[in-house]
Image 1 (cartoon, rainbow, N blue to C red):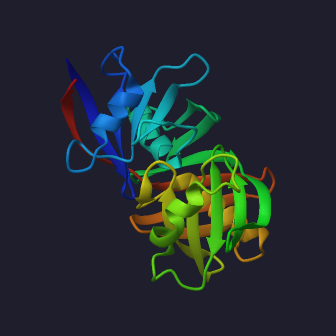
Image 2: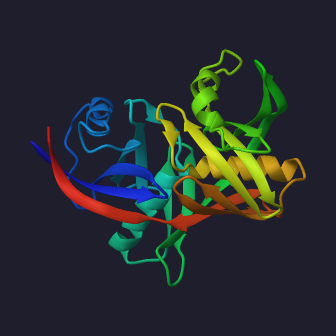
Amino acid sequence: MLIPFVKMQAQGNDFVILNAFEHALPKLDYAELAAQMCQRRFAIGADGLVLLMPAEDADAQMIIYNSDGSRAEMCGSALRCVSRLSADHYHKTSLTIATDSGIKSARVLPGSEGIEVNLGRAKLIHSEFQVGDFVGDLLDIGNPHYVLWREDLSDNPHLAHGAYLEHHSAFSVPVNVHFAQVLSPDEIAMKIWEHACGATLACGTGAASTVYSGIKRGLLQSEVKVRVPGGILGIRHQKDSDELLLWGTVIRAFEGTWKA
């Protein structure tokens, strides 16, 4: 069986996407398929496998599997990628996507390859939450994030401590871990350790959670440029609704078929 796919990336956060608007999805064990297809160097390689399908209550639906085959609740980068494909399919610039974390709205930014998505509200679960020798903020924006603020990120703390914190017993479920540095009130840098993926080049929900943490700490303004290893993201906090908007470019890298 040959399975058509498209490979897309958003600031280096990359995904293998099966697009049911173009090809019928076969009946397979998608958790196992994700673990096979997402292997770096041995297969296509990606941070996750994404299924894009029609939906009854939205323009489209996405289902995400991490590179290890586990199910992901939400991913801002994948949401932007499938929003681009959905916008192309419907020939419209504003649309809705059903996710495991609810329905999200998206729009194509005028005159660019940029996509803006509304991630909804973030919840600050625990501020100044101590985990071992670390103190950070625990947030949820459809998936859990642990944010730690540092004066310097040059020693790559995510590589040294990400795996330890991801599975620490202080958390009820594994978390995404982000080390962040304030560059100015409207700009930060961050290093990322994602649950089930390890070190990644970008994380949309992580960027939004980190900015929200910084706003709550009085460190940041409502619109922030986020420098991730794979490029630049933008986060805008809407004070009236407390919702977080994420924007950034997405790239269709290549298309192919996978022999299952």
